[in-house]
Image (cartoon, rainbow over all chains, first blue to last red; front, side, top):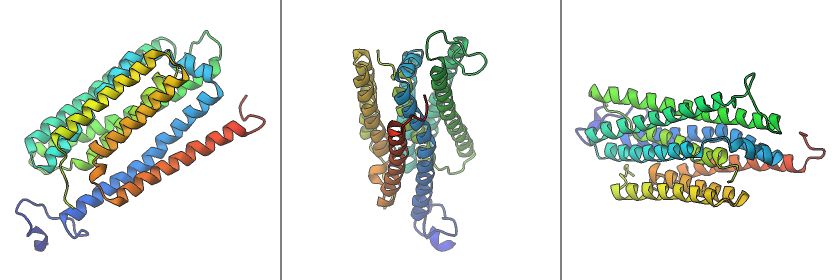
Length: 215
Length: 97
C-alpha cells in the first residue's frame, strides 16, 4: 500500500483493513478498552462477594481484615502508583518518538511491578505461616471461624488474580523491550492502558481488604 | 485526532496528588472512625481511580465512544453490585444464616 506511506517517511504502513495509521491506533486502543470493560466485571464479581460478606458478617470481616499488614499494603499501593506514573511517562515518550526514554521508563515500570510481587510474596508467606491460608492448615482460635476463613478465600482469590494480571503485564513489557532492542517499533499506549487498569483494581482492593477493620 | 502527549508537569502533578490521597487514606484509617473511615477510604479510592483513568489512561483526550464504553462498564458493575445487595438485604428468610 504505497499510498499509505505518503504522510511521513517514518510513519509505518497500516494493516490492510485500516485507512491510515491514526485509525489503526484508535481501533487498537478501543479494543483494549472493550477488553478492560469485561475485566471490570471479572473483578466486579469479587468486589460483589466482598460486599455480601461484609454485609452478612461485619464482625468476621473486621476480625479477618485486622490480620492483614496495612504497612506492607500501603507500601505496595505506593509502589503501584509509582509504576503507573512511569508507565504514563513511557506512553508520553512513545508519542514523542523518544525511543531511549521509552526503554528506560518501561524497564522501571516492570521493575516496580516485580517489587510489588516481591512484597506480596512476603505477605503471603507470613499469612501462610500464621495459618490464614484457607484449607486443611487454616487455624483460627476466635469466633466466626467459618466466615473468617471465607474472607481469606476471597482475599487470596482477589490478590492472586491481581498478581496474575500484574505478572502478565511484566512479561508483556519484557517482550516489548526485547523487540525494541532488536530495532522494531513497539506499541506502548495499549499495554499502558492494561497496566493502568491493574493499578485501578489495586486502588480498590487496598481499602476493601486492608482497611475493612477500621482501627 | 492525533495522539496527544500529556505534559510531564501534568503527569507529575497527578502522581503527587495520588500519593497525597494515599496519605489521606492512611490518616483517615488512623483516625479510627470505624465504618466512616472505611466509607471515606472507598470514596478516596474512587477519586484516585478517576485520576488514573482521566490523566494516566488519557481518557480526557479520547473519543466519545471510549467514554461510552467506560460508562457501560460502570453501569453493569452498578447493576451487578446493586441488585445483588438488594437481594441479600431484603430476602426473607435470609439466604445464609
